[in-house]
Length: 423
Image (cartoon, rainbow, N blue to C red; front, side, top):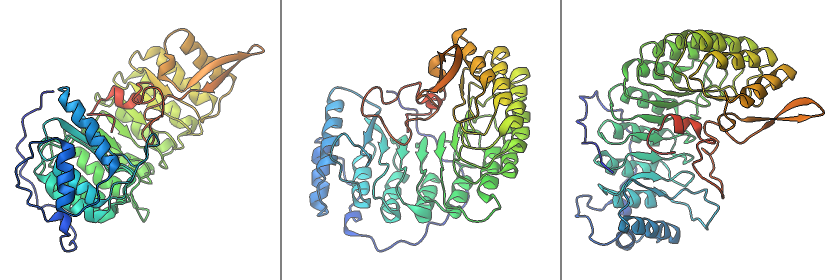
């Protein structure tokens, strides 16, 4: 796997001030300039644990053994997966001390470019020391922290790290209890950072009704021409916030995947988005699931897709209180729009016209069965739609214990816009 040369860090503003830390614990006092070990990753992990009097985790040792075997086979671009929600084997969850050791092991390792530590016990203290190592790391491209309660302080440490690191391409800090301060810090950093292509800021802990996070992220999108994928689930976005994002999308020419699911967007927000879609030529995937756009919002979108937009490939309007009129309008737009290939509609109010419309799209081959979350069947001469486990990111929170873990039909968003790996 060929790596792109390290980009020079942009001339940045003053980095976001990281909160003061506790005294350096013994496990973080290692000399980070020490030479890399000659032995395998298992051996290096064992040596670091012994040196720092840290407990050796059998689960981590097992994962490192598998990675050593992959390296011996000549594989590159490996992701080190120590997720804490694996049900296929006994898991002892990773702590801040373990995270620091893993970052130390991966320092400039040419074979590993991804680290997945979701759903573990990493707090802001562990992040503070690991972030210092990541500042100078030139090989790690993808980092997934989902579900670790690093909170506002941990988010600030990562934002400060991105002021210096010029190789990380995808960062997932969703469901990490980020605060408003750290969300603003990420938005500020990304006005300068030209390396990050994918960012997940799902479910921060926000207070107030001002939609401040959306204002700052909208400003970032006006300045940043590198970000390809942005997840903003559960940001309490309303129509005013959606307008802020849409105003930014008129100027942005890089974003291809926008996820604003699980917010409070209604039909008025769709007026703004539909107007953007009439001129935007970069957006390929939009996730509007679990909002409330209703028939009027669906009609605004269908008009833009039928007559103007020829770039969007996937649209999810799952659970948006849309009735037959709006759902049929979206199906009609697919007949005149040759680019829109994926549409997800489950959780809305199907009537007979809706069921027939989507059954016809599937049977005529315009809508492939893998590209939607419904499947038609007939009972007593009447068409019905059943739910199918397809979607833009069905396996984001969990990985199936059987079958293909990264199935394109279940993770269509990441397939259509492949920013790094399925992190």
